[in-house]
Length: 395
Image 1 (tube, rainbow, N blue to C red):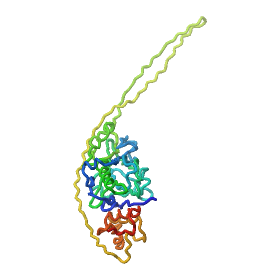
Image 2: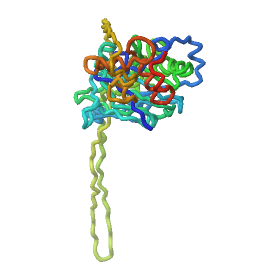
Image 3: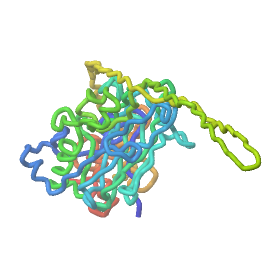
Image 4: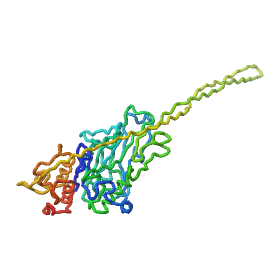
């Protein structure tokens, strides 16, 4: 039975919850390594790789200006090396701010789940409104999955269209990035359903070796063929994961070919009458256009952005109220995965999705004071039958 886990809010990684560009609760340290050493990460039994395809081409593609300006290009997030090994994922995807991600008829970002995650739970993608704090040239969104078994497979996880601006120019490059986000008690995810040591090492491998990034895998590069068509690709940031590029301008060259006209004279004689007949062959002069190529090389320098983040800490004091029903965070009279979603939404954006006072009491189930992402994880396990409802709150 499909179980829906949160997909966050409109805002972005408030990182104590999955929403808003945020994340799902995790164990160990909130960074790419998940607290593991290099040797431990390299020893992972599952080694997922996340990668971008553009119009079906891995990493990126170079288009002719007339074929793409003002039009949309299909982009996909893919995974390999993790078949039937993952359930919970939370991933940020950033793209050049000049591009546009359309919305569907429901007003949601037009991001669709692919075959690789079709048997997991998911909700509409959420815009990451804080993306520019991490890269001033980027916009982004957040997607997530959850499940009660490791039903995630290799293949396409998510697809989306990006619209190239109508005023795009020859030589333009629009980068795409799989960007790891974390903060305090939450981080992006790629976990198995048990959230055990093997799953956490797999996650560490995914975000240190399985994507390009500045700290651990700074080796992204466009193919030599693409650089030959768009010189600016030679300078693309090596921590990015993909690109939409436009071929450099090509100056037409002109060649003229001249054909000479000739006339043939033929004489025919008979016994009765002599007739001289002159036949002229009609010859056509044609001019053909050939092309001379002038290549313009553009070097783009990336701006350096310094970001100062101010953490806002909100303290919530909870005490048992009269109608406490542990696990019922959304106060709908029952305990389900929807309560885990409610907690994550609350953590992601309290102004918009904050729990009520009774919900705060009901949500505190992990045996530790205060409502955190770990409470949401406990309720996911209750929904999956791993923890019994009557055991709440945990001791």
